[in-house]
Amino acid sequence: MAFKRTINGKEYLYESARVDGKVKSIYLGPAKKDKKKILRPFIVSFLILSLLILSGPAQAVTVTSSADKSTYKALDPVNFTVGVDIDAGERIPVKNLTLTISSGQVNKTCVFTPGGTAVSGCGNLTIYPIYTVGYASSTNLYGYGYGYDISSTSYGNNNESFANGYGYGYVSGYSDSGLYAGGELRYNITWNLTAETLATTGNYTAFLSAHAQDGTGDFIYSNINNKTSFSIDSVAPTVSLTYPLNLTYNTTLVNVTFTAVDDISTSSTCLYTLDGANTTIGSATNNTATSVNTSDLANGQHAINVTCSDAAGNYGTSSTQYFSLSYAVGAGVTITVSTSTPATNKTKNTPAQVNVVKVNKTLPIVPPGLAKKLEFENASSTNIKSLSITTKNTQTNVTISVQTLAEEPTETSGFAIAGLSEIYRYLEFTSSVSNDDIEEAVVEFQLPKAWLEENGYKTNQIRLTRFHNGAWSTLPTTLVSSDGENYYFEAKTPGFSYFAIFAKLETTISTLRDLFDLIDSYFSGSSALTLRELFDSIETYFGG
Image 1 (cartoon, rainbow, N blue to C red):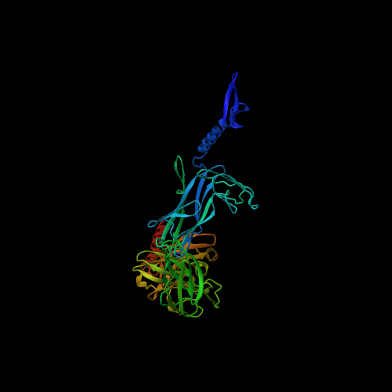
Image 2: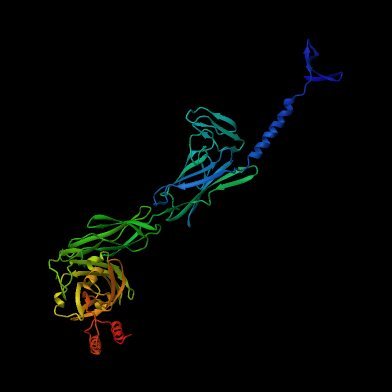
């Protein structure tokens, strides 16, 4: 046993021992203070204090979640990638992580450990750790203290630091890059919708939160303000084919009108199957009528349906409609060129040389009292730019045809057009709506400026006339606009039949007798003047 002796004010160290059966003191040397015993407690205390200061919640922690798709079928697996990114030099004492999946009717909360082990609420969820704190290369470094892993040449030197109860998120030398560079917590999580009875059609959100815990309290890190949104869609679109109907049509082009309704998707991708052949339509807005035209079809019976798929890949098909076409051969959009020779001089009742053209248009529905307008794309072929129709009763599947005529119709032969100077073109309008059901139709037509200039006509001489009940009736016609090549006129008609675009004689009044004759011809119906023009003529004669 060591003991001290003081000699002349100095301390000497001795140790007692038995020598030859007697207790003797063995001199060990001057006594010295043990500096190590003094410094060691101080260093330990300092390190503990430093660790406490550094062990607060991480200030640079990013919690993320994402899904591999935005819409899933009912039997598809939903794949999430979630992670906790910790900046270099930061540390977070993660106790567990929580993935929350919710919709209006479903609230699923899965709690799992940093190692990927389910704790609670993770039914039908499979968690695959991509890499976690404590794992570098193939060697498990999880533990306490400070360790080095140089066993893997592919990753280089990997340093993992741990204090009691704390996992450090940064791994120096790890080869990964991007958001998760440094080897923090990262997982693939698969949700099995086939086994999940809670999963119903609807819109969902998912977010990850990390629960950290140390001696000062609990800390929650989450991406609740940046949730992952996705949809589960188990219902196929409902497709309704409203046109054509199971009828016979006198046309070569058939309008296909349908509506696709889906409970999740805002649009569907559609195609129609006509006589067994598929034709892509493209995108159709949800719950909105969509119309397309088929290509030229042959006479006979045809079968058609429409199929649409939503964003999840659910397919819905309409019922099949059977319809027939029966038209005269050559009654397509462009038929044959007339062989008649036009007059070289300006003569009455002789139309300009034209190609015989027939254009068909359709309207799925025309409500009563509401004008429905049809635009004619190639107006130069028929001179008709547009046609608006207002019906007295609801009309469905309305067809309207406009055909140019190479010569005067046989039915109108011998019936004079009052005030005629020259015919520009004869036309025939037909419709599936009877004239008795038409409240009003407005025809917008065009004439080349060159024709008026070459023949010396003014725009106020142009008229549209309709043949009805054995007589030609000139319609109120007004100039509405013009461009570099054409004048555009508008005329109102109470129904359809044969029509003629013509230039009327220019009215000249030099005597009072001429004026009376003009007034008499207007009220007898033999004049092409409108009431407005009659008033203008009277005003002009009296010097107004």
